[in-house]
Length: 309
Image (cartoon, rainbow, N blue to C red):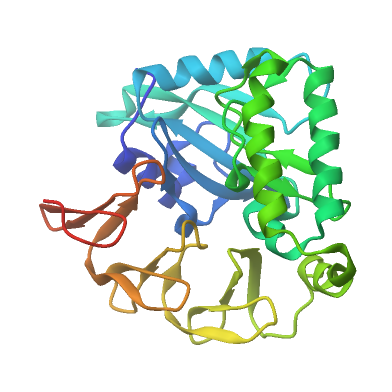
């Protein structure tokens, strides 16, 4: 069996020593669990390095991942390292079945979805053009180059992540590069006004007490003695630290867990899109729908938070 369920992967995130064969020492950020069409993912830290782990949710998923790993094996470290660990995840009754896990190392930096609002036009285009050259040199296509799948480092270099759909063929990147260039033109800061804002975005030494996380969609998650909240790019507290857990913002939404253990979804202003009344919520970034579970009941919400069924 080479795929698992969301619940099986969540059990692994909560107890990696029990469910992972070789990566049992990894420490997961369980608030970062998210689903795409074919994978469920979570960020973890192992020996001071950050990784993204993906578990296949469909029969096709591991085929895509194996193809991507073979495609990237000839890139000589030009991009993030992607590996498929066969039989890494133990699942089912008495662990009689296993599932492969896809692992990517995560570089330090800012997601392009945030950087395009805080970096200059020339620096962003520099990163885009350098990535074009690297991908053309290695004749590789990412197949899903979106602002949420690219990390921009302190030298303005771009590092795509979520490589599991990668194939050979540089021409297939043309449309994605064109779309990224158009987004940069719309969103980037004019070069004359950029230096101060760029320094603010790149510096990660803000004065707000507690543990800090990367800036995502103009919000930075912070954990204090009170709980989890969010500050903006100027370090102003914009969402009070009243939650037990919260995910980083994606598509203007964060899944939050209240002190009583119930989950909901808030927007960047802290307003509820889905009230905190559920045991678990899964947001699908492809469809925009959210599946909310309470006991044995399932409620599906659309992107605006309206009930679908």
